[in-house]
Length: 197
Image 1 (cartoon, rainbow, N blue to C red):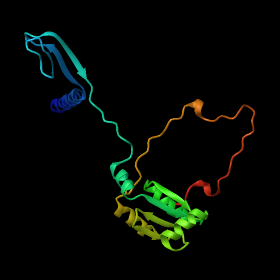
Image 2: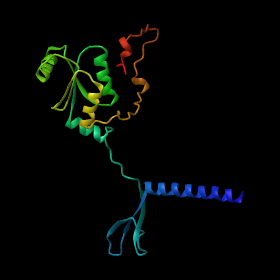
Image 3: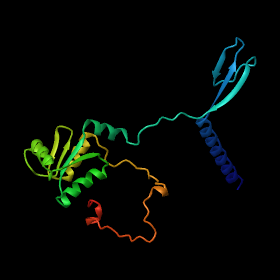
Image 4: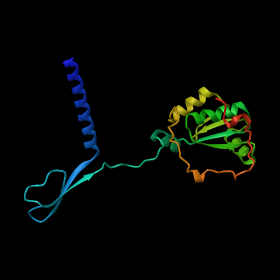
């Protein structure tokens, strides 16, 4: 029993030391003082005994702001931008778009039912067949083949999974609210609005 109590006490001691070390690592103490020659000195070491106007300051750690986009995704997007030539072709086009969305790949969608989009597709492939995936200038895949598209995205350096996204809180006053007594109706979206997986 005494041995067990010593182990528990030791574990609590270790936990307290780790917590104290973590807290110390988060803040740093810096001293500002005037030395014997009248110079103002900033140091993380205790000032000499003959120093004047000693002030101790605690500094919090520095933080570097960065974007939420992982570096691999940012580099791949810059080097090999993705364009999806598509139209309302049903499950095939929905699955093509779903693959890009699952991987978190930013892409430009070109509707080939539009005359301008059809012209772009004709120049790129010499045909009017969609969906077509273009990655950068050289990687082009006609028709949806998940294995082939996945391999092309891997080759271009796109991450295999989408980056985590933080939930965005919308203030209550920004959310649309129907006036009291107003009739509300649900709008049906064919297929639920989401590409089939």
